[in-house]
Image 1 (cartoon, one colour):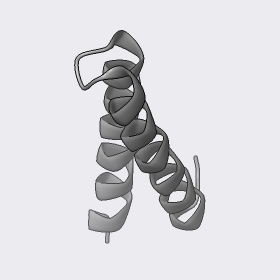
Image 2 (tube, one colour):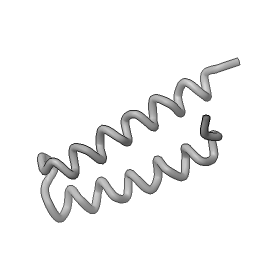
Image 3 (cartoon, rainbow, N blue to C red):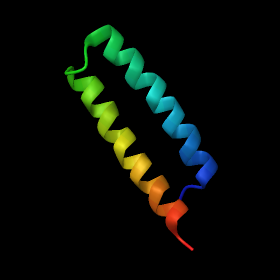
Image 4 (cartoon, rainbow, N blue to C red):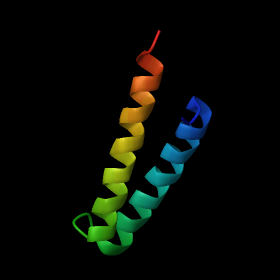
Length: 53
């Protein structure tokens, strides 16, 4: 399992990648959508990690 720090770093990178892809290719382009889905998965993983006691 990834650490919170690793997840935050990956989330920030994917955010940057998604914005760049959206600007260049459009929001509905398959690559932009794929990055968005990966980002969602990481955010969900991060949320689960931070909500554990």
